[in-house]
Image 1 (tube, rainbow over the protein chains, first blue to last red):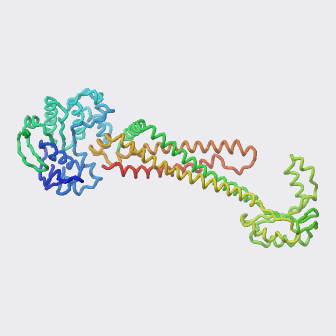
Image 2 (image 1 turned 45 degrees about the horizontal axis):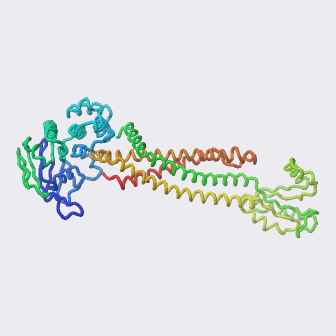
Image 3 (image 1 turned 45 degrees about the vertical axis):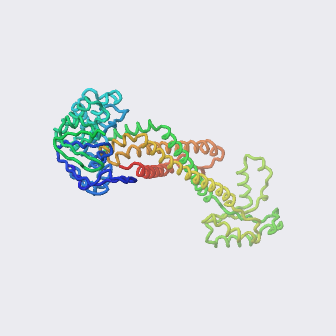
Length: 230
Length: 302
C-alpha cells in the first residue's frame, strides 16, 4: 500500500537529511506506529506520503501511484484516497461539526444526497451522533479530534495518516482515540500513526517503526516503545 | 464538479469576511469603466456629429455683388460669363458631388427664414446678400481643393468652408477622448493590482479552508473557483454601476440639457451607452479572469 525505497529528503537550507536512505513497506490493512523523538523524521515521512513534499531521491509509491512521476494535477486524486489527522485538529471554527465533515465531501464535488447519507453515518461511527450542530469550540479536545477523524474517513480512504493525533490530549482520551483508530483499521483502512507517546504504542502492541535522525533503527511487529530517558 | 449551491455559500462567506476589499474593487472598477465609457462616448459623439455635418457641409463660393469690397471684386458684380465659367469648372471636378446655385432672392428668402424671430431680418433687403454656388463634396475633408482653386478666381468674393469651424470642435473632442482613455487605462491598472491584493488577502483569510481543501484532495479549480467568482461578481457590479452612471450622465447632459436648446438630433443618447456596455463588460471580464488566474497561480499552489 505504501512503499518507500531508498528515500532521502533534504529540506532546502538544511545541512542534515530529514530522512536518510529510508526503505519501508506497509501492506494493505496494516496498523503501523512510527515512533521516535522530535526531529527524527516522522512528520517528513507522512508529508512525503501525502505528497506535500517531494523526495530528494528515491521512490515513494502510495496506493499504486508513483509519487515521483506524478504531476501536480494528479495530486488531488491521490489525496482523495487518503485521510490525514493532525495534532492541532485543523477544524474550521465557524462551521458546525456536521459542516466540518461535510466540507471535505463538498470540495471534492460529492452530490448532496450522498453527503446527507455519509456525514451522519460517520459522526455516529466516531461517537459524535447528536453533536452535529455544535461548533468546535463547544467540544472537548477529544471530541474535536473525533471530528477531525470523521472528516478524514468520511470519503472512505484506503489509508489514514495520523501525525501525533494524541499530542494535545490527556492519557484516557488518547486511549479512546487510538481505540477508535483501531476500529477504523479493522474495517480495512491502512493506518500509519506517528507519535512519541509510548503509552498508546504499548497499549496496542502493533508494528513499530522507529526513526532516529532520519534513519530506521527498528522495525518490529507487535512491539513496544520506550523513550530514552536522558 | 463542485455543487453550485456550495460554491455560492463559499462566495457569500468570502465576501462577508472581506467586505472592505470587495467595496474598493467595486469602486475602482466603477471609476475606471466610467472614464473609459466617457472617452468612448466622446468619440461616438464626434462620429455622430461628423456624420450629421458631413451630410450638410458645403463649401460656399460667394460671388461678387455691388456691395462686395474684396480686392477680387472692387464693387463690380460677377458677370454671366464668370458665373458659367465657375459652374463649368466645378462640374468638371471629380471631387464635387453636387452643385447648387443660390440666387440673391433665394439667399434673402433663406436668411429671412433663418432669422424669422430676430429683428435683424428687418434690416436686410433682397440684393444685399450675394449669390453663391453651394458645393457638396464627396469627401468633405478635401475642401481645400475648392478654396485653392476659386479663392482668386474672377467674380469670386469669398470661399467659405464649414468644416473649418467644426475641426476645432473635433480636436477638442479627440483630446477629451485621449485624456479619459489614458486615465481609464491607469485606473484599470489600479483595478488589476487591487484585485490581486484582494485575492491575496482573501487567500490569507481563508488559509485554513485552503489547507483542508488541499488535504482532502480538492482540485485546483475547486480551490480557485470561489476567489474567481468573488472577483467576477465585484468587478461586474462595478461595471454595472459605471454603466448606470454613464447612462445618467448622458441623460442629464443631452436628453434634458443640450437637445432641448439645440433641437438637433446630432447628439449621442442612451442607445450609445447600451452599444458600448457589452464591450466594457467583456473587457472587465477578461481583465478580472486574467488577473485572478495569474494571482491564484502565484499564491495558491497545491
